[in-house]
Structure formats: C-alpha cells, structure tokens
Image (cartoon, rainbow, N blue to C red; front, side):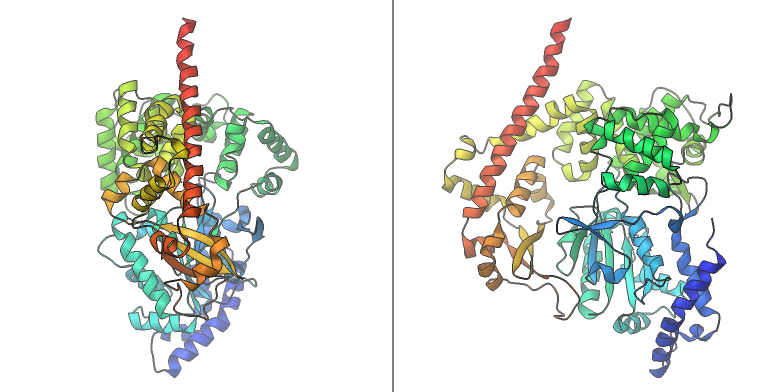
Length: 601
C-alpha cells in the first residue's frame, strides 16, 4: 500500500513552519544550503520522502509493502516497574537515547513510528534523519551516510550544512540496528556519535540495539528498554493484525493454555505474529519450540496456496519441503559462521550457498532456484537493491542455524559446543535457541563443562575465604568499568563496560560473564551513593543543560572498591557461585535422567 495523498498533505502542513523557520535562518547567515526549500511545493516533497519510512514488508504482510499505521501496536518503555507509552521524541524524556530490546521486540518499527510521528500533530517539531546502520560499510564514516540522507531532503549536503542544522536543535538522528553494524566499524561509529553529541547540545540522537552492545556503554546515552508484551496486550495486538474478535479470543486462549516453553516466549511482537501464522495454519499451537518453528517453515511455503484446493506449488529447487528446510538450515549456519545473519551482498549469498551445498548431501540444486524459493515463495529473505538479500528478521537465521546444530551427529555437535564456549558472544542467540531445542547436548557439552571449569577456582564453593575471593575479583574485573546513573539521589548501574582486548574477552566464558554481570548489577551500590557521587571521575554529558533524566558517570570497579571496599562485590560473587552450583546440579541431573532411559532397552 502506498502513502495516501491525505497523509502527505497533512505531513506537508506540519512540516511547513519548520521548513520556513530553517530556511529563513539559513538565508539570514548568507548560506545557500537550503535554497531548494524556497519552493512552495517543497514541504510536500519533503513529507513524501519521509513518508517512505512508513512502508515496510513484514512476516504478516509478505507480498507487498504495508503502512505501519495500518498494523502497528504501539510499543511501551519499561518505567519504574510499569509501562509507559511514547507518542513522540519528547516522550522519551531524554535527547540521547539507546532503545534496547531483545530479539523481535519491535525496535525498528518503534523507531520508524517515532519518525513518521513527526509528520503528525503529535510530532516534536523536528526533522528526522533515519538511517539503517546495517547499510554503513567500511571505507565510509557515519557522517557520509548522514549527509547522503540530507541530500535526499534537497539539502546542500556538506559538513557546514550539518553543522548549521545540528546547532538549531531541530534535527533528530534516528539510527536503527546498532547490533547489525559491521564489527570493524563499531568503535569508529561510537566515537563519531560521541563527538556529535559533545559538539551539539540540542541534537536528538536515538539508536536501537539488542542488549549488551558497545553503544549501551557509551557515556552520553541513556538506555531505555522496550517493555515485553503482556497478556493484556494480546487482544488489542491481534485486532491490529485484522483478526476478528472471535478469532483473536480463540488465539489468546490457546496461548494461555500452551506449555510454558512456548507461552513464556510469546512476549514480543515477532513471536506473537509467528504464533498467529502457525495457529491459522495448524489450528493449534505446537507444544515444543522446535515443532513451532518447523510448523512455521511449512506455513510460509504453503500460505499462498491455502485457498486453492488440490493445488501444490512446485518449488524451483526440485527439493521436497523437508529437504529444502535442511538446506536452508545449513545456509543459515554458514551465514552465522560468517557473521551474516542480517544482510548479504549478491557475492556473499552466492559464496555462502556454494559452501552450504558442499556440506549438504541430501539433494542438489542451483543457486538461482534456491534464491527463488527462499525469497519469492517463503519470503524468509527479501531482495534489496541489485542482488542484495536481507533476512526478514535476524532471529529467522539464528533459529535455523541452531536447528542445523540440533541435527548434527554427536561428535560434530560436541565439537561445535566446545568451540563456541570460547566465542560465546558471537553465538549467543543461537546458543539460547539450542538450550531449548537441543537440551541434552547443550547441557552435556556446553553448560556442564563451562560451569565445572569456573568452579575449579573455588574448591570450597561460596565458602571460600574472603582473601581468595577478593584476589579472584581483582583479576576478573581488571579493565571493567560501570556506567552509573543518578536520579534524585538514587544510584543505579546502567551498563557494564569491559575491555575490548580479544584475548581478555576470550578468557571470560559464558559462566564467567554471567557471574561478572551479577557482580556488576546486583551489588546494591545505591547504599553507597553518597560516597560514589563524591568520587565520580567522569561526567557523561559535557552539556549540563542537555535534556536527560539522569546524571551519568563512569568508574572502574577498581576505583569503586577504593571508595567502598570489596564487601558488596564479594557478597554478589558468593551468590553468583551458589547459582552456578545449583545450575550445574540441575544440568547433571537432566543428563543423568536422559542417560538412564538407555536402561529401557
């Protein structure tokens, strides 16, 4: 669906005062940056350009682009134990924000929604500049992409024109998908953003990201977390998908009656949408995660044909649906190995397919046939530009990569789990899926060895002497800082910042990272707020008047311990050790119970 004439007309009317104001200011300085804005029809052209952000393809509406307003259920921010709806940029309460959300939580849709709100009466009166960070490639700076987007607004795109607009406080940089940024670019993009924020105190910068990325560690940003979808959201969300009240009630009841493994996952827009798709096809919700996604795979290949009795679509690959799924799983695993679980160039797609075909022995097919079936029939990938392909959602690649591991024979699976223990961060989401769909081998080859290796340092467990625990903490927290924030006298840990040295990170296994996180976030530092606020070493914002609800600063754990001692951290460490001991006990019991089933035969 295309944007309506009425929508563009409303946007033009809303933008007209902003356009006039900025044009007048530019002319008063003798600048020619905005000369094209003098045309009477320019606000309409600008509104039409920004409106394009509203048109998207989704899993629900896969055959054509749809408008966000036609299906979007407004996201909420977690706030003081509750939820807060946000209608525009000002509603965030801060000008430099990381919008954090887990897989499928609607970060991108939320950012697009805030962007198009600037064309409505609910807008904040700013000019939004929307950039997908996955489009940023090595060899160019983030500023190059900002200027390129400005050029589409008929602005003379130069550093001087950006300087002019940023100083007015009337632009907002909306940067989507920090977690999809090329690893080689992370530090340079973070530094660019820090410099922009430092230089322009009135600029608005919003960045979306999954948890535990470097942008959350960046001092100028306040991290706001998207709230999970609750039971109370099910019916209004389902109605936005166009379901009748009766059908929506039917699905909501099915969700409430489904096993915990499934119902506990239906807390994001993506999972709720997938649930509806599977339910419409199967008339039930599968009880296991693996069955759920396999039903989904079957659904996306047959959804075109449900209304055509007796019709069975022939796939160009010539493979059966089950065989094609296994090839797709192999392809997704190869993508994960190469760090390509979001977008691939035509060359990357071809080379990844060739590598997949090399290891796939259940059937042969050609590149173009595979591309057709996964993009034109299943729509699990979308074609963008000339030959570029993008997974409809990153979690699609991650789940089916995990499913590839699930099907491996014992020795190959063991090799995988042993390897990823040393590179957990890269494989984190895939490991999370495997903990549910390959539970036995996940426990046996990954979790148990990891817990055992960690506990070797504590022969007496949590009862080890304080001196020994303190020595361990000093070593563990070397190079670790905490981003602290204070509001109305209350102090909280906003994020943990670890050194980026790959050798140091390699030594921090999955279990060590969990314990370190417990030490950082569960040490009740608020009890020492008066001492730490006096000892702060770095104020986040160089602009005291910058709109933010918090005063943030950064201290290393070494500096914090010099101020308050190690006691609060030792308490958290002991609790962390006890949790790992319990987790290990449960994992061993699960494996032993499964092994005991051999006695049946």
